[in-house]
Image (cartoon, rainbow, N blue to C red):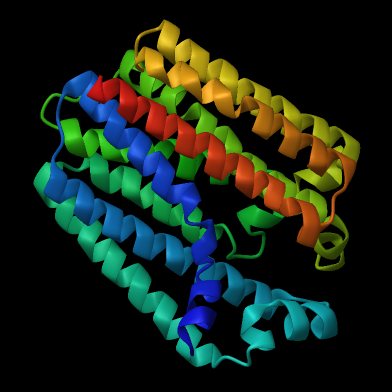
Amino acid sequence: MTLSVFLELVEFKAKTASILPFFIGICYSWYNYQSIHLGYVLLYFAAMLIFNMAVDILDNYNDYHHATDVHDYKEKTNIIGREQLSVRLVFWLMVSMITLSALMGIGLAIVVGWPLFWMGLYCYLVGIFYSSGPRPLSSLPLGEFFSGFTMGFMISLICVYLNAYQVFEWNVATIGSIFLVSLPNTLWIANLMLANNICDLDEDEKNNRYTLVHYLGKPQALRVFAAMNILAFVAILAAVVLDIAPWSVVLTFLAAPFVWQQTKRLMEKQIKRETFICAVRILAVGAFVQVITFALGLIL
């Protein structure tokens, strides 16, 4: 297996979806707690990235086995069939990465407290059952919620907890504040899956995957996509007004014209190879600008 094939197998290009929520958690921790435990968060970052890659391998592995459209999808689209990878090698690579990341997480939980264990367990269950079992989460109308909530919110929440576990309070105000700051990422990550399902509607239905788009229809799904992009900016403004993010985060609105342009492109044409990238760009640019403007406020 070459490096380029491995990076495609683990969908390395999509790791923005986990890395940027991590940095939002770092920024929030410093702004609201003035506390960073560098060693803990670096270990968490490594475990998170390894598990995220393992989940993407699992997704490709399960899609390969469950595909009913053998000639087009299994042999030409799925990377395992297309690159003629050893299924046994892919399986053990996936198991090794899940085990390693789990051991790292359990080690951290022993040090900082068992709330980390339960949060991590939730993330692992979602990651594994996202594409596994008789009815994978990714094939249900719940996929957008679980992907957005788990990667957008839970990654940031765990990061904040690790940095402030000595004084962290489990109450509505604390959880609500972290949720609001992480809401743009939550929505943009959910939109990533929504855009994917919009573009793949016909192929998904051939493979018995009845996603949210199947029930809403493409026109309504596209309206939901646009609405979530608008709500992301509303959340950014609200976080500044409530003083849980610095004033500089308002500068994220500079990315709004770009987000709107990409939204219009997807609404005009829903072709995977041409316009799914619009959702990827919205997440990458929107979340990156939010992190940069948050960090700018910490410096100033």
